Amino acid sequence: MKVLTSVTLSKVFRRLTSSAFIAVLSLALISLSLTGCVQQRLSKHVYTSDTGGNAKHPTLIEKQPTLGDKQPVSSTKQFTVGAERYSKYLPLLAGKRVSLVVNQSALVSSHSALPSSTVEPEERESSNSLATQKNKIKTSQRNQHLLDALLQRSVNVVSIMSPEHGFRGDKGAGEKVDSNIDAKTGLPIHSLYGPTKKPTPDMLDGIDVIVFDIQDVGVRFYTYLSTLHYVLEAAFARNIDVIVLDRPNPNGRYVDGPVLQSEFSSFIGMHPIPVLHGMTLGELAQMIVGEQWLDIDASSYDNAKLTVVPVQGYQRTAHYSLPVAPSPNLPNDLSIRLYPTLCFFEGTDVSIGRGTDFPFQLIGHPFVEFGKTKIPVNANSAAPHPKHENTLLSAHVFSYADPTILEGSDSKQTTHKRSPISGLDIATLIDAYSRFSEYNKMVSASDASEETFFTRPDFFDKLAGTDALRYQIQAGKTPAEIRQSWQKELSKFREKRKAYLLYEDTD
Image (tube, helix red, strand yellow):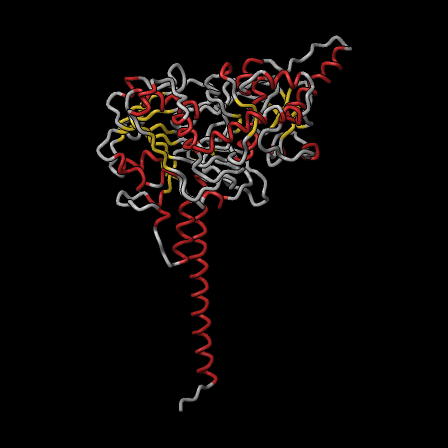
């Protein structure tokens, strides 16, 4: 029998200690490497939060807006957007000349980028739980543009059409978008915002199929819906099929606001639907065609086909954190949540933060006080000509925006008494109107100049889809009274939309 002496035991112990140290060190290095990879990937295209949980200052990373709200990154990895469901629509593109209506939001997962991949991500089965987790992580990394993904799959894309804010999403609101050539692919880019909002016959010459893939925010006056309308109208008139690759609605749980009256129809509201319609663009495309809202002959509806590829695994009430900013002045989840309400202030003298670090995250005015935080307004790429340019706003900055990064701001003065609003909050509009009224009463005693609240009443009415809301605010109606006036038309709309819903209703 072999006997272990004290010297032998010492040698064994040293070997074991050395081996254990090497093993631990190796595991640590592997862990750091994996962590670094994940952080590097996520930093490019998903919402990021700092370690303290506060919203980061909006910046640009690799020419993509970095979204800095508190929302969880995991909210984007539980479903598959229509554009990623290749097996549902690639056969429809085979041998066809394709035009894409897209912008910077048409992102797909890079994990399914191989041209040989024809099976949808959600259809791949694996008993390996680790592989499943990796697949979920990759699904959240939507960082490849649909154009590149389709070209890799040998789809014959012959042109691009871009909406408001341009193909790269870097143009300010209302800023003219010029037609151009894509530097990467050499494909022509036709502008659908500016003098030409509807595809022309020249743009559609030689096109067999149009693929539409743009992220919406679920609000009637967000103009991507109007672009979709004109695309459908032009395509159906020329017997061109349209495929809409659907994406979730970040405000999908809300159906609220006045239903648009036809006399107030414009590019910021074309359809008899409420401000918050609770539908995706795919569902609305079906409704536009089904209700025959297009300005075409009735026979033209039968000469072309609309195909909608739904989002797999999507629930209308689920939180959806967008992987990229849908437009320059909606940089994070908070701005998207506040947009349905704050956009109404575009028809007033109240600033909603264009030209500041918090677009659609504050309300303020140079003279009428909304809060103690002083915020400068200066022109920038997202707002070339902002309201109250080169002034200081007395602003209320809504929760999760971080005004303490502003020079000279007092963090004690920025404590918010109100919770962040969601849906359409009429009380915020009424409160703002009353602040102007109180200010004007005060300055009238000293013969100082008064401030006008509704500086663009016609535009306010177009946003509302009616002039009733403006008159109700001026008449001193309560939020409950105003909201009650919408209910009859909202009930009719809810009933009508049922035939076109692709996802479980919220009712």
